[in-house]
Amino acid sequence: MAQSVLWVATRKGTFKVEKRGGRWQAALSGHAGTGVNYVAREPKTNRLWALLGHGHWGAKLSVSDDGGATWRDHTTQIKFPDGARYIGQDMFEDSTSDFGVGWKIVTRKATVQKLWVIGFGGDGAIWVGTIPGGLFVSRDGGASFELNRPLWNHESRGGDLFSGDGTGETKWFGTPASEGGEFAPGLHSICVNPRDPKHVLVAVSTAGVIETRDGGATWRPRNKGMSMDHHPDPNAEWGHDTHLIEQCAGAPEHVWQQNHAGVFYSDNGAESWRKVSAPDVGVHFGFPISADAHNGRSAWLVPGRGDNQRTAIDGGLFVARTDDGGASWRQLRQGLPQECAYDIVYRHALDNRDGLVAFGSTTGNLYISEDRGERWSAVSHNLPPVYAVRFG
Amino acid sequence: MVQVHLTRHLFAFFPQLEGRALEVEASDVAGVVRALEALAPGIGFYVCDERGRLRPHVNVFIGNSMVRDRRQLSDALAPGDTVSILQALSGG
Image 1 (cartoon, each protein chain N blue to C red):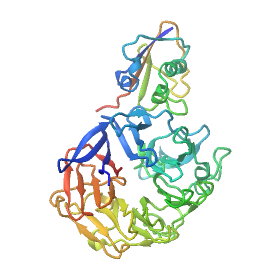
Image 2 (cartoon, helix red, strand yellow):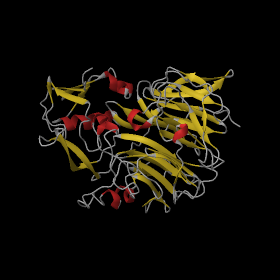
Image 3 (cartoon, one colour):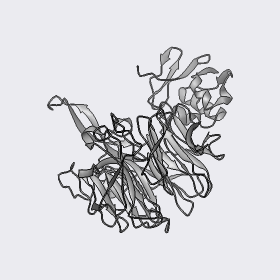
Image 4 (cartoon, rainbow over the protein chains, first blue to last red):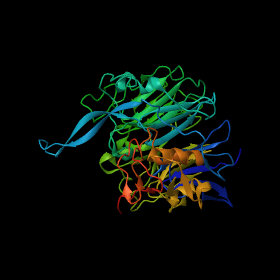
């Protein structure tokens, strides 16, 4: 087996983590001072892709073809096509409101606020999710990227706004917690079925899980069995605040989901979901989830204390793992701080591969385990806020 | 011709422009961005979004005055003007 490398995307650059001299060590790979939302290796070409968010200069794709020694802006950048619009909400001063402000529905021109996630299909397709919630695909190795219009124009978000005003109603809420504080839903999860590259699951906050079985020509919601507590109808078809979905590579009918409203699991390819939260052991709220590549019933997550705090629970950091499809969860604390730890782990900042598990927090702590999470060691306590970790 | 002054931050991404006296032929700010794009492909998408609007945290000055039209970049230029493209500071 090749030596594992962990790629770490942070608010201030991309880091490469390797085991040298018996110790995992982090080193700056590139993008010093620049926000990096995600970094991953393209399996077919070994190219590294980093999704950058410059504070001043916008969202950029960056690539490396030499293992992260050098990086350059990709020759093609992702852009919304002319005429792409979406329905959002704008705040306005409202003296009749107790809060002094109101919200109005507006239709906005789309520009890329954030490149959030990249995924790779077995057919060589490269998929990228953005805020606002766009899905772009390249079928020529990245030479060009095209907005997936069937999803962008989906009836659930108001229909085709390229050619008219659509229905005027979106069921994709978006929250001001997203990039720029705008009400813009973001697409953060892309699961390409390893057995069928035309079968893709994506997830959007706050819309839910959406599936195509024809390579993106048609899309349908996959939210059956999910519930939410921020909607008058807990089981409504749309509006679910999925934080992340991950699919078991070796058994893709097993799909895991960390949601704002709990943890959900599907053993039928997201046809239906089952809530597998276990609040008694802290498993309910959080952002990341990582599915085992071989055993569909195994997954890891890093719980947080509810949506009103969003910190580690009671000052003790732990990872939870299930090996029985969520019927039971074990808290894995050995080697993790158990006093005055208030880290939160973002949705892409947990990953596993071949028994290795790693996660990084917004506090700049990076931990790795070589035994499926039983024991942890710190790689660094001083990284910039961690946005994503990916083995590759 | 107009003189163009760029924040040094942009030289990190477009080192070919560093140390050069940038003079371009342009009658408005949009023309400056087009001319820069010809000199350094990609720089236009650093300064503007895909709709051609100035990014929110970018300021452009003609002389010492900030441009008025951030959407179309239609502020007119006269020969000899100096255009500065700078990062906007939001305080802090």
